Amino acid sequence: MPKVLEFKLPDLGEGLTEAEIVRWLVEVGDVVAIDQPVVEVETAKAMVEVPCPYGGVVTARFGEEGTELPVGSPLLTVAVGSAEGDLPEDLSDKGTDGAESSGNVLVGYGTGAPAARRRRVRPEAISAAAAPVAEPAPVPVTAPAPAPAPAPGPVPAPVSDEASGPVAVVSPLVRRLARQHDLDLRQLTGSGFDGLILRADVESAIRAAANGTAAAPSVPVPVSPPASSPTSAPVAGERIPLRGVRGAVADKLARSRREIPDATCWVDADATELMAARAAMNGAGGPTAGPKVSVLALLARICTAALARFPELNSMVDLEAREIVRLPAVHLGFAAQTERGLVVPVVRDAQSRNAESIGAEIGRLTEAARTGTLTPAELTGGTFTLNNYGVFGVDGSTPIINHPEAAMLGVGRIVPKPWVHRDELAVRQVVQLSLTFDHRVCDGGTAGGFLRYVADCVEQPALLLRTL
Image 1 (cartoon, rainbow, N blue to C red):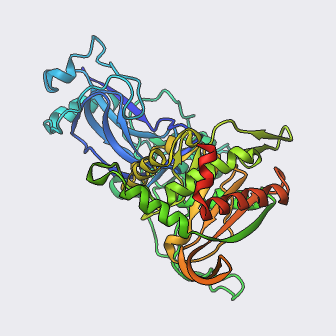
Image 2: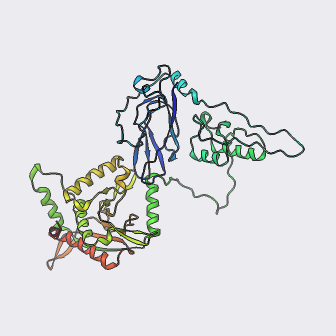
């Protein structure tokens, strides 16, 4: 007899507590192998493919695409072990209990077993596999017989975490509401599609238990909205949930503004020599040369040199300890706009890389950002951020610090402008640089010194030779 195991949304790390189902990779009835990806979810950090640690037949899925689930919520159930030969041999030979699993939660870790081709089993095999956990028939809740003294209402049986079998509930809020009121969901008949238990069903059962009456399945009834006054009317317009990457960005920006006393300074710089140096780098070596060095890579290399001179800006504030923490390594983040919103991939140990190495890593991370394959580790842990908003055709901005970092350098577009060069008016390639910094970690003198050094390196790239 097969054993049905429930696979729950695992802890995806980096303090993530929830994820949104983007796309199911398997259907009910599919045969899955150990560590085969079964669902694609979007966390506050990135898209993640979640592998199932069990091999067997998918008997149920929980949550439609677009549903947001907290960590620990059921994702799907899998029948493992053979059911009179109905499961393939490569999945049924898993030991005497048929419950072998890898214990892994993320793609790329553990057994590395090849994913099985998606296969279907006979419907009767799925029924047999799911038989041990079939839901009991709904039992109506009846009111106590009348008596001279009012009798207490029925007390729902407490929900046992050990109860087997899936319940027709998708929303984790419904499950939590039922747990808070010790309500057994298996005693309810859902009013949703295919018997899905809705929040209204649970609330009706709670009211019935409190009043000592039977809980009837709730049926959606159109209700005319009450007449509302102009002051209480909701704002009309499209409503877009703040969740996933967009919600995480909103939370981080709001926290930055709330906690960090930031200040901004800026300066115009003549980038003509920097552009000439870049052209010389990319022209050297001929067709056998490596990848082209981007302007962003050169600016990133300038930032690492500036942070070596002004380490105050590569730090963070520990509010609980009331301490400034100077960080030994420069993990350089750079803002990247994607179809899913703004993300900030991180180049690790940028202080030990040259411009070519930084450029190659920026290229790799940018491509991963565009395809939505960045991992949570590649989006966290930054110590300083470089924001090139010049790609949007703007000259200046006052960047919001990427909490909990201490500073961000903004770079505007590089455009021809009139400029006094060697005491003569000339047309030069000019860029505006702006530095937003945490005033708790340094004063304006340090921030100004950092920005002035960056501008000097932009105007005279040979200054970088001193730090190479």
